[in-house]
Length: 183
Image (cartoon, rainbow, N blue to C red; front, side):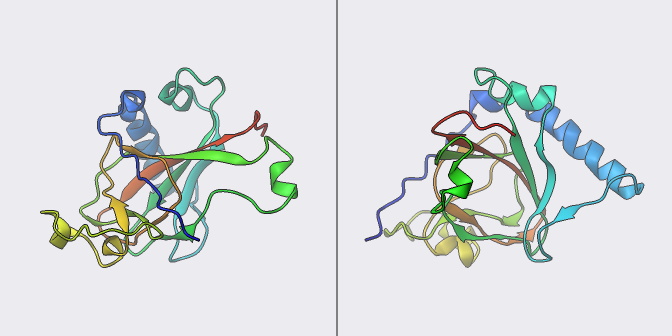
């Protein structure tokens, strides 16, 4: 039986007050890539490119000041890129040995997207077509409850990332485990 997943979008999340620092990291990566000093780590042509996966930085730790030694993954979706519907828990013993099961995922948005790039919760059902911005959603964004990618917002739930139609979507993922996760 499918349960309803509540999308907790938190506008102007105080924990993301360091977006300017993240913007600096994003811009630095763009310059390094353009000059051939760094390459994209790409999952697949239609999927998301990963930048700075699981890297320590002073700026990264400042996103959640109350969590020591934070590690998180920075994602960059370009036009046509998406993330397929998925759950952030594991069904095997191997992936739960370090830190135990994932108990929460926080997706933080570091940019606005011109068109597309919504985070959708396809298992969640409801009549949301009456909202005034319904016609602004991409086809993918109309497939379930959704969160528009807005800089400084965050979402906490199982999801998929819709393809970016226009612009770029910069975001970050932080997973919380039952026990400490050591990388």
